[in-house]
Amino acid sequence: MNREFTLDAYARLLLALRDLGYEDVEFPEAVPARRHLVVRHDIDMTIDSAVRMAEVESELGIGADYFVLLRSDLYNPMSADSESGIKRIIALGHRIGLHFDASLYPGQDMEGLDRICAAECALLESWFGIAVRMVSFHRPAPGFLGLDKDIGGRGHTYQPRYFKALAYCSDSRGGWHHGHPLGLVGSGDPRALQLLTHPVWWDSKGRESPAERLDRLATDRHDSYRRELARNCQPYAEALTAKFHI
Image 1 (tube, rainbow, N blue to C red):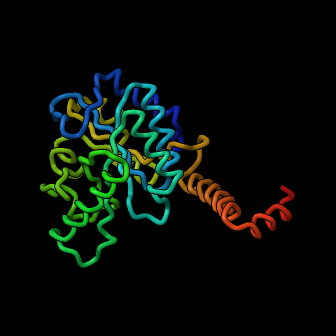
Image 2 (image 1 turned 90 degrees about the vertical axis):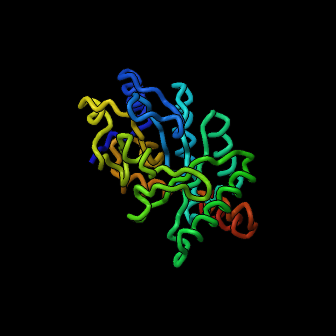
Image 3 (image 1 turned 180 degrees about the horizontal axis):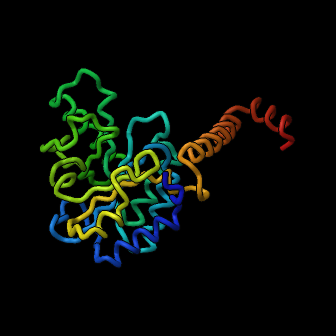
């Protein structure tokens, strides 16, 4: 388990890749035989951590693709705070894609999922005034890995030209389960690299385990939820004030 997932460590990783000759590009521009770096972030749990990561990348002059869940119990991309965060990511020069959770549509065949994915993309485009060009599957079923066709009229991150022709690293579950990216490219592999991170792991206090990081996130969310309840309900606000002497 790598406990050194911090934003400072992330910046050092990007700089190390740059020193090795890697140049950040968008998905369609990646040439497997060149040292191209496709920086991808799946936002599974919190927009706030994604904004902090986007700011680090912007300071380094690096652009990335941020994939947003449209339907999640963990955040609402169209709430005031999340919308502000996503707009901040866009303003920093990054790209927004759809993080598509096909498991929410049981019984749908590929034709049905294709229509639903297109509808979700269109909603993101309409709400944020952007073009959604790429899709990333959330917790993809095996059938989506290496699927050699578009979804919802867009390319997706697990197509062979991105998932197999390119080297691939992911910090899923808070660790490098596909090998550390510097270990991979340091082995002499000249291929372009798709680097997938989940911002929540890197927005840490240093040496936090994944469980500790998520527990802190849950505490923060609990406090935020109470503040929002108080903002919307005067009797609760009065009770909260009396209880905590605020």
